Length: 71
Image (cartoon, rainbow, N blue to C red; front, side, top):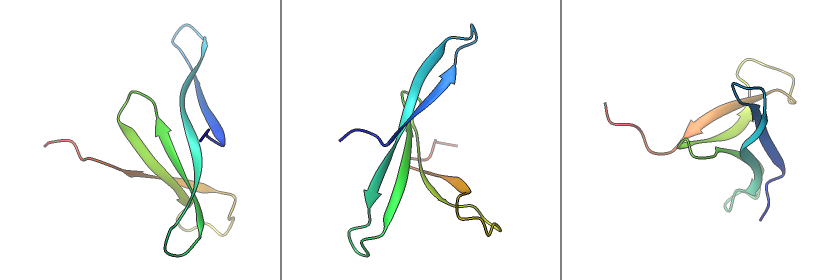
C-alpha cells in the first residue's frame, strides 16, 4: 500500500529529498480512520492526531510511538 502523503525535506546543499511518508489506516476495533507517520532510516514513527488545546480539527499533532531508546 502506498502512502497518502510523502514527507520531503531539503539536504544541507538544498536538494529536495524524500524522507518518509504518511499512511491512512483504520482502527480494527472502532473503524475510525487515523494517520501514521514514518521517517525513513531514522527509527522514528508517529501517529497524527488532534493537536492539544486546539478547536481547529485541521491542526494535527505528531504523536511518537515505537521502541524507546535505552537510557
